[in-house]
Length: 352
Image 1 (cartoon, helix red, strand yellow):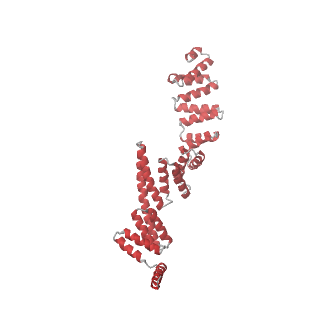
Image 2 (image 1 turned 120 degrees about the vertical axis):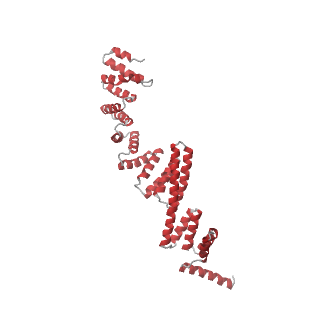
Image 3 (image 1 turned 30 degrees about the horizontal axis):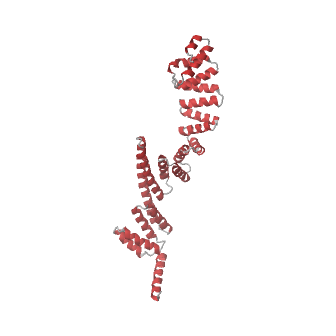
């Protein structure tokens, strides 16, 4: 290198050091601002990149590159440049402006995703599954972008979990919900969607933990109580299951399905005949047309040798029994009348 070239290089280096140490505006930045005033963002970006090449901590260049990336819709780059500008020592006013820009874009993306989510729900109600999935997938793209801007947004994470759930991407749905729980461990919406997802995935141990939290917060939550009852019944935890059945009946005392399940468990698992009878009597008083419950109750009366009760319960319903349940009902009537000594009546209900 010639002496003249060496001097020129040293002058450039000294100028670069001077710019970095004294916060002197780079001529590239000045030129870029002029280009931006003319809406010439291509040349402006080129100059700003050169400014950053000369000084990786050029706050103004990084800030303006973030602004240009925002205009281009490249939000990942925008956030990267804004973060670098902040780390390079951007003043409070610039930091506030960058945060406001991120929040405004986030709000737009979140609002748009909410519109798409509602459209997807509407199509579910219209039984347009394919159309609903397309809407949810559009919402997902918006929400993923919104999380680039504010990565711990509770609103975005929750809506994202539901969108993935409706598109049947359970792993992604649970990932979003559990990320939200890292941000807010007591977020009940996140706990509820996590419970639903893990139950649907047949991860019952994990689901029960979530449903347990829901139940402890809200003992009248029917879904939580019902899921816990079902789980305990399958695990043969009889007292726990009956406790959950009673919790449901405290909310819905006339819930015939739960009354039937409770009676069945009392009889088969605890050998509590009187408890089962009382529960089935309650069921039949609520729904006198439940033929399955009537036959079950008739069987219990018969086993207790209360033959008159069998007759009083079953005979008024004799004409309503179908091919599926007629024989067990008529057998009860036949044997009960026989025990009561009424042979003529017994013959009426005899079926070979």
